[in-house]
Amino acid sequence: MTAYWNDGDEQDVMLRVAAWPDGRQTGVPAGENGHRGAEPGRPARAATDGGRRVLSADAYEYIRSGLIRSRYRVGQRLVLRPLAAELGLSPTPVREALLRLVSEQALGLNDRNTAVVPDITSASFREIHRLRVDLESRLVQAAALRATPEELEALSDLHERFQQACARQDEGMMAAGNADFHAMLATMADLPLTANILHNLWARIGPLYALARTAPPARPPGVPHPHDELITALRAHDPFAATRALVSDAEYARTWIEPLLPLVDAGSTA
Figure 1 (cartoon, rainbow, N blue to C red):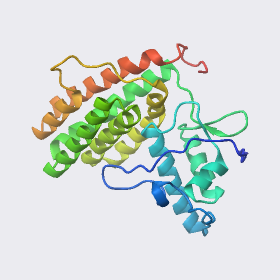
Figure 2 (figure 1 turned 90 degrees about the vertical axis):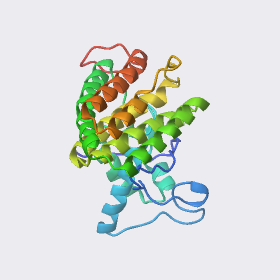
Figure 3 (figure 1 turned 60 degrees about the vertical axis):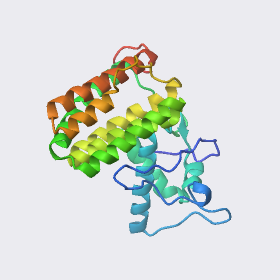
Figure 4 (figure 1 turned 30 degrees about the vertical axis):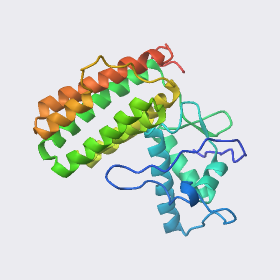
């Protein structure tokens, strides 16, 4: 099927650079002052066919990481030419990246054939939640059996940053920090195929955190966060305790997010 893209000048909020906890930076290099794309007065980069494939992959990883880290919100448009300009790329590799995300259902097309972050129904969220718990349980069990002290320290550092964002009520950094924590868990498991499927699911639910505009409910004093329990279980190399902590964390997120979703039946359009 041929897709026709709206290349107009609709304004779009651009996300920041995102780096995965394993040190792999997504997207193309940042410009001056940390902004993405070409420097002022410099044209977007062209590429050969082989180079374009690399740039398309970079654009894909950058946009997908933004979805996962809640830098895009449900309903937000990703307009081709402004997005390409921000990335410092020609439109072609960015179009290919967007088409790939559309094919994976991480993005949709609106009535103007512009890429848009899709809505999600309550039924879809429940399905994604169940899949996420299943896949991530497998990952934390594997991580518990092979986690190194260095990986556990890195995971603890990510959780500390997440907790600091919670204390500041910095909702954007809370969502991004939580996603980074779970991405690190997936890396520690050393199950790349399972981790990639999980990242695709996170690309669907990440924008919900951006849309919520509210912090999760506070925990009672003295009640540890499931991340703390998960780190303790990983240090003890206890896959069963790690799974319990992961399920507790996912259920806590579900009870916060699900009431914010549209109350529509399965098969309906949100």
